[in-house]
Length: 424
Image 1 (tube, helix red, strand yellow):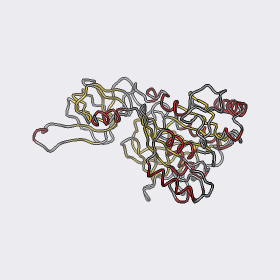
Image 2: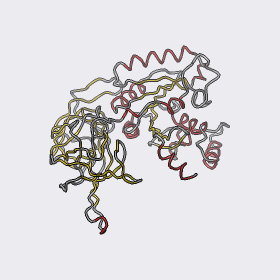
Image 3: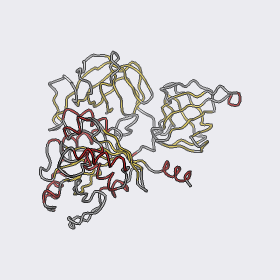
Image 4: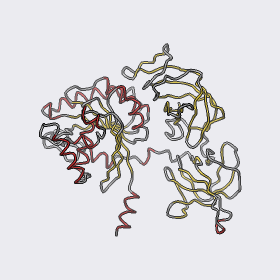
């Protein structure tokens, strides 16, 4: 019975979501409420939170402490670092990234949101849409997060008035015309009291939409992955040193796009050599087909030279290739970017180097205006730049494939990740 349960748990669909909002909009409290009302908190965790809440002296259990793990966060009542939490319901598994709301922690938000299927953007019902709301919505759009759920929080502090909800909804709809997001939902909630988070609110009978938890459990994410253009970056070449596997050569990695079948004709980049898939192995054994984002080992009929960083594809959709790459970046390092500077590049499983050729513009994330005059890029800045790589790169646009369209830049002297890039 336990084996069946474990297999069922492993087979459940995984949804990653991130929270965004201004300071004190209630992001951590909302996550705490989701975990608490969905019975995803262990007794010892709850006891620790209750003890920590006593120190605040307000007589209430502070659910935000479930994610604000750093001592500085608990003392200040804010989120500084990205906090990840894992939980599951009978319908889905979830990974939550609780990201900071402060302007100076933009890089942390980008890190937490880079793999998300859904962005929860919190808006304080009393304050409405502010500059931070615009900034977070823009970053969610920039990172091509397919679904945005706008949680209009603290409805209890505006007497659960429908007008307050409608005003914010119409204001955000105007912002949405400038964003590249096609699925935006709105939910009026009170994270502190639990209205419309997991359980439907009795205080807002005018709202006939789903609760937040219902949306998270049922929002369609299967089509978020590109299952058309096949992409398999080779991570490791498997050659077992055993007599029974004497001739075995497998290419291990994660499928980042499309569907592969046994017998498919494939091409290896950059060599251009062609072959057929002789077998596909997964954890449970051999399979006839595999698809993104499965981790697999692929074997080919022909013994050709393939190594880490090579890309196996089918001929149905070729990636772009070139050395001059244009992309949007978020700068992570305290040292400013050096125009003309050399950096290491990591793209899927490929390692190479590049030179920063040009800065097209910086973006003021509060107004979305392009600054073409100031070419200095520092910590948390978002900009459009061009780089030249030391060898041709095979890539997709970030819009087409978030995995093969993303790049990180690394300072070779310190080995620090200095920027995350999204290829245009």
